[in-house]
Length: 307
Image (cartoon, rainbow, N blue to C red; front, side):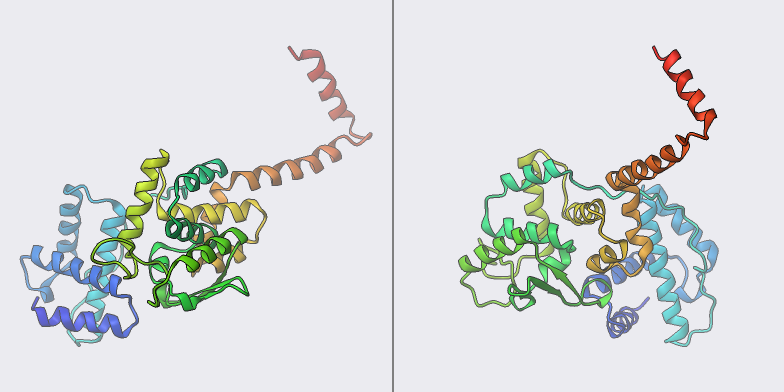
């Protein structure tokens, strides 16, 4: 594939409001695919895609990574057919890899306390508390601006989140207090909220990788296995355990589909436990009706045979 075709494809993705990060990933995947090909792109058939998948498997790529490659390649062929007007069939018509569905990992309350005990830096404490209480993605934290914060209304505006969506989230008392402390210490007039504090990039907005390195540092310091995205999972699980409605959590997290949010139902054992005992109590009360002679006999049998 010529470089100009990749450039045109990148421009097409930008026109469709794909993020710069996504555009870069798509172009990198397509560049990898084309370098591997032994036939012109217009002559690719389904068999070639199968061989490519085999090659990725030999390199021990995960099912999620391979699926990402296939989705990207399919989108590119759609672009060639629909926008470049090339007469061909899309060789990626169906993605049949079975993806694992691991439970979202979250921190327990004691682990949250342990983590924030070892975070002493004012910026980092505010940054990770906002991530935890507001359920923000690491990219959303990195892009936050001072103007996005409304301390009086205890609101935070997330502009151009995943999928180009805007949303409003809310500040807990502890997140608000830490932000106020950080903002008083922060003297820069830069619009970015969380800034680099040392080195040649001082006063520049902290990058996604910079934030990840900070949580990795605190993970080692606390002895916890924790990541930025785990803080988001923790917020969702805590809200669900506190009986927040699933649609509320969906809106706060910025999920496009309720099925994405429903994953937390599988991990929120506390809520399941409460619901079970509440419901089973009703069942037991009905079973203990005076008319239910059979149940009374069962209780007598249990008492007589209990060790």
